[in-house]
Each structure stands twice: as structure tokens, then as C-alpha cells.
Image (cartoon, rainbow, N blue to C red; front, top):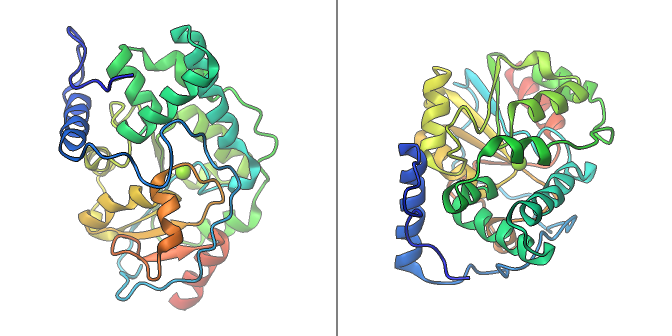
Length: 288
Ligand SMILES: [Mg+2]
């Protein structure tokens, strides 16, 4: 399928989402290179554990000035081994197949192509197919979350952090509320910044972070971002935030595959976290 070079005629996009689309198209036009490490047709390499050793950043930012603790949701606040996001991922392809009337393998191809081009599959569907986001988000998040464990240790670790806490997700607020409630941590968060609040401009786009910071009156240089996708930490690093990559066994993006070649942490990843609760407990201990 030829890649679109401009929004379809007549598509009335929010300015921020349109800027996101044009940025992607400009980048693509200048590179014209296939993404390394994966095929555009391939699905996620589920539960492939990367052999990422304990890497250190040469000059990591610390958490001494952190006033706002910001957490991604999927595969960050709960472990990828719950297979929750794998179910969301499966339902995305199902929805696309029904919505566009195409075979499931082709829907899967579109899903992953849009994800890699636009930051989320949803952005691609909105930009290329003029799809309304509501029914898609409702369908893909209509999942059984019984595999998500109650996490009293994580709760205690987050509760002990001094400052405000936010969830910042490319998913929906309802999904974040359900999962955080199941984990037993929902009440610890001041608010959830979801994809609708960001006018459907997703991480890793810088505009999504600008919107989140503005909406919640957060100073970037006094905030920390926890996230399982390495490329989603590039903008927060550039904005002055402390960044922490939470290791996930769910591999779904070329930037995760590239981690196999890391010998030191890249500039935008200040800390590598294997166990979120233990890491946060360690921060607390160092504060004493
Ligand atoms: Mg995530």
C-alpha cells in the first residue's frame, strides 16, 4: 500500500494532530529507509526477554529536585507478563479488520505500520481514514483485567514518594482508571493525562508532553518520567525531566529491539529500572 504523503482531502484535523502528521511525512520523505530490526508486517515479539545488562548512564540526572512523578501505564505500572497489552494489541487488529472490511493479516499490517509511523495506531486511523476515536478506544480497552495483580508493595513505594503523581498514557482514561484500580494505586494519582486530553497527539511527540505539562502545571525540570518505551523518553529528556526506562518483556517497537546493542545507556535514558517497586524503594532509602 503506498504511503500517504498528505492528509486526505477534506480531512479536518486538530492543528496539533495535523502538525504531527506533517512532521511524520516530512521525516519519512527525507529518510525513505525501512525501519531497521523489524518488518513493517511483523507483529509484536511478545515476551521476548532482552538481555539488557545493568547499564549505567555516564551522568544521570537524579531525583533530588523531583516534585512531580509521572508514570506511563501499560507495561510500566503493571508487568508485561500480565499479557494485558497483548490483548489490547490483538483487539486493535480485530477492530481494524471490521472497520475497514479487510482480512485480519492486512489489518495487522496496517496496525503496526501506523503505530511505527504515527506513534499510535489510533493516530494513523484518524489521519488516514478519518476514523472517530471513541468506538476504537472503547473496543480495544474492553478487556479482562483479572490478570493484573493487586500490588501493595508498588502502592507503598509510590505513596512514599514526596510530591505529585500523574499517569500519562496513550490509552484512554477509563482504561487507566480500571487498571490502576485493580493494582490498588488509583487513589495515589492526582490525575490521568490520556490520549483525549492530548487531542489524540501521542507520545513520543513533543507536543503531547508540552500539553501534559501545561494541563497539569508541571515544571519539566522538576519532574521524572517512568516509561517502558525508550523512544518515549527522548522528549522528556530534551525538556529537562529525569527519565527512567522500566524494562518490559513486551517488545513491539524498533527502539526496543535497538536496546540489544546498548553498551551504555543512551543520553535520553538516565536510569534503567528492572523492578519498579524496588527502584522506588531504593530512592526512598537514599533520601534518608
Ligand atoms: Mg507503556
